[in-house]
Image (cartoon, rainbow, N blue to C red; front, side, top):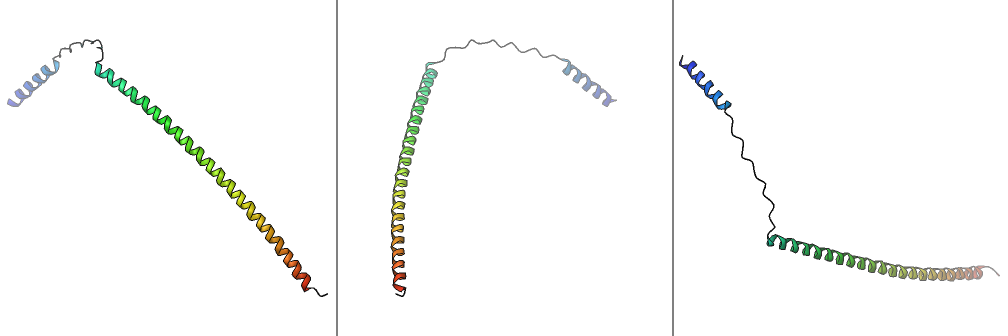
Length: 115
C-alpha cells in the first residue's frame, strides 16, 4: 500500500511539473546601430593603405619578373645565334676537310695507277 501511495504521489508531481507553462521571454529591443568608434575607422584606413601598398608591391614584382624573362629570352637568342655561327663554322671546316681528304685520295689513286 505504501508503494501505491508513493507511485500516485510521484505521478501527481510529474503531471503538475509538466503542466506548468513557462512565461514567454521578454522581447529583445532592437538597438539602433551606433556610429563606429574612431579606432575602427582608423583600422579600416590602415587596412586599406596596407592593401594598396601590397598591390603596388605585387605590380613591382610582376614588372621585375617580366624584365627577368625578357633578359633570359634575349640571352637565349644570343646563345642560339652563337651556336648557329659555331655550327656554320664547324660545317665549313668539315666541308673543307672532306674536300682535302677527297683531293688526297684522288692524288693517291692517281699515284697508285700504273702509267
